[in-house]
Image 1 (cartoon, rainbow, N blue to C red):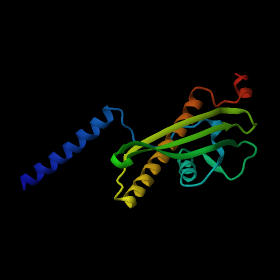
Image 2 (tube, helix red, strand yellow; image 1 turned 120 degrees about the vertical axis):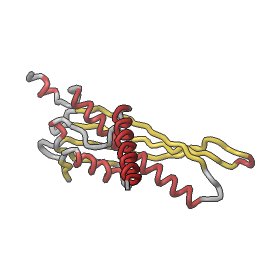
Image 3 (cartoon, one colour; image 1 turned 180 degrees about the vertical axis):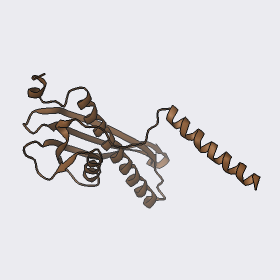
Length: 182
């Protein structure tokens, strides 16, 4: 019986040490971000489809933002004119067989206030992931590309949210009319 208690105590202490180590290195779970009042209601326009618009909309809502179906008074405009994936071959083996690829993801966005003033000018974010390609496993390769694209979508949503939050913290997301009244 005491052996089982010692084992549980050991497991609990390992779990506690792991949590403390993660906290000490700066790791934080992804969560909501604090956006400025000028972005509490947003109309989202994303060129293209896929899971990116849904993921971005969901992340905004988790952050306390109301995502509106249409623009209008008191509603900021988050415009994403470019959200595009691309691939490049990195290395070739004998007989011109591709063995490594890189998946690139480019997103451009800007934010305008309800009055049409630019809150955040055009931003360009580029991300990429490399992976090994197995010519004998085309189904596995397609699945791997889908997983990479999902991961890039997730990382891109977080990057956009962090830029929106940074703009609010540094006063960039405050309309000029509001900034001049202080």
